[in-house]
Length: 140
Image 1 (spheres, rainbow, N blue to C red):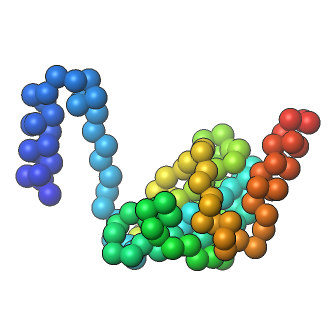
Image 2: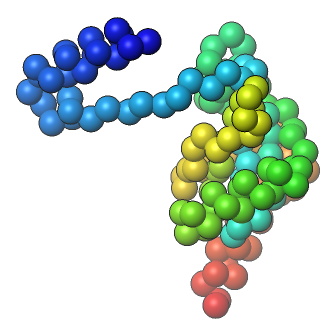
């Protein structure tokens, strides 16, 4: 809310450190207690999972979220291709949220991909796909 934001900004303005002047603001997304992690290799979405949270808004597997396979729809494929192209492609983790008003939205694009949970449920060999992409990129 506005009062809380004003209080945080005021508090940060009186502190000395340069990091105290950095603000990260994100729109609150009205979503189910899960998100979607998509692994893209090149500009292609190759596998995806839901990361289901148990009561917490954070959906990281490392923090206890449960993985469940997610079918890659045309919408997911399109959003991830655009996100990948926007950051120069490669091997990426694209995180999507299911906004109740807007539909799927890109939340984050990671170039250091955590896929431990996805390996448990994926129908493909993720490390093999990544290695083949890297080798093919070197050979070009």
